[in-house]
Image (cartoon, rainbow, N blue to C red):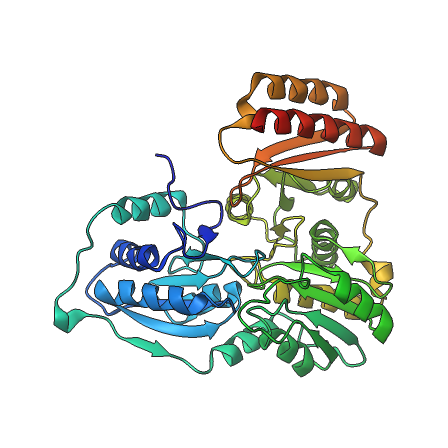
Length: 446
């Protein structure tokens, strides 16, 4: 069955245009609520959001939808996506909802759904909800309409949880840490957690106004973080995205460290302590070949999945691995969380620094990346990847890189983009291959 609403990470789009309208949000609340009604108990849904202006509108619409089918609603206010997942489980809720478009600009928004176990929904659950969206809602009688309640201590609950993932025997005393919260969901909780663990904290991106989320800051725009780390003489910089489920790090010299290096460090640190489970790390097809080679040298396997942290998590659960993630900074540590958690991942990096008594610049460069190039080609309509000329260019490139590199070409699950990635030992060859494929896609999309 083709998907109409759900993409690779929930429902996402431009606010006030389908599918990101208040009307559809209300229907999502009704459909998701109806799907998760189970038994005769009072059903409960937990709703969090990031700091986008449209969050108020989407939150109100979802509350109307859920209460109209008999679900009580617990409102968390601005909270990280992983906090919603955690609180869904700890509050014994039947469903969790995060209103966010992650790293996208403020004018986009999205709806992410979590089951009662705190994990993102399966394909089967999403398809079932999509089917219900096409039907009239089964509204409850007036005396069974749900109630909505806002809890005031959600931030404290999440800070306590995040700190509990940091070793009891360690502290952050003496460390100067710059934290960029992207004017997003973690603007209070992330600096608070680091300060409570003893660090000197320099916060950036902690003044949300509804329209500045991810604007020239956060994990997708680390330039300000780099400058601040160097200028302040900080030991390390951490950058989160708008909903705080991804992490990018800047070392003490101002160098940006991506998710591949972070996964390598966490996995090998856990292996050293006898805590690593499974036979390796799970990552997507976009992770650098250098990571695969580095793990192999340590006797570990890199298991690759489709792009999307939900696919990484599925593979982790199937293989019994407890470390996985994406190059973009979604780091999933199933010993602690059911989804990517930028703050928790950052705390594990800091624990390795303190535990091994090493500077960030000495510790974080785990391996030499293979030259890799990713370019996006925007298209308006049609299926340019299916064009015969494009397929021929791709086939030629695969033969050219055979044995010396990799090629990954895919359609974005959240935007009208074709993503073209190539990597190999010869940087000039990689650039030539990507340019040739992009030109073919652009011509087919014209």
